Amino acid sequence: GGATPGKVLDHMDGLLLLGGADIHPHRYGAKPDPSLDLEIDESRDALDFDLLAAALARDIPVAAICRGMQVLNVASGGTLIQHIPGHRNEEPNATSMSMQHRIWIAPGSKLASVVGAGGQVRVNSLHHQGLMEAHRAPSLMTTAYGVVDGLVEALESPHHRFVVAVQCHPERANELPEQFQRLFAAQVYQAANPNR
Image (cartoon, rainbow, N blue to C red; front, side, top):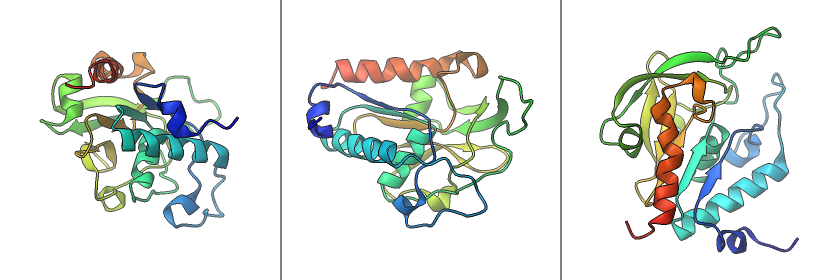
């Protein structure tokens, strides 16, 4: 007890924000939609938002996945769509393999440099919340979009050395192109080479 996020990050070289429960809508000025069965964990919200604020203040490399990307957007002043139908397996007999969809990665973005190229790739769909361009925080850049639905699939901060967020789950390595594993390697490299 007693360790603040800032003190914790004094001993860390990078921050990886992972998937998980839904962010409480009050964090982006909304009320929970009563028609939805949101999974909310406010203690996790408090931890993630405080850690991210401390990491951004210190310019520590941040990689963010799914909920992590949503935390980055909301913490930076953006909002979310509380439910996007059809973006994860919601059938009781769904297989362990997630749904797939195509995204377009902007050439010249940090994400494109990490995965080796811009253009279209297929990724997994394991989220029910997300954002469109209108929900994006003004301080962030959209660096990937859903080809069919236009949902934001990746965000970066142009104001920090390495802040890269993706909506897909690259840790599920068998479900998307192997070059997405480079996201973790790139964060480790940035953490190990703070002056690059």
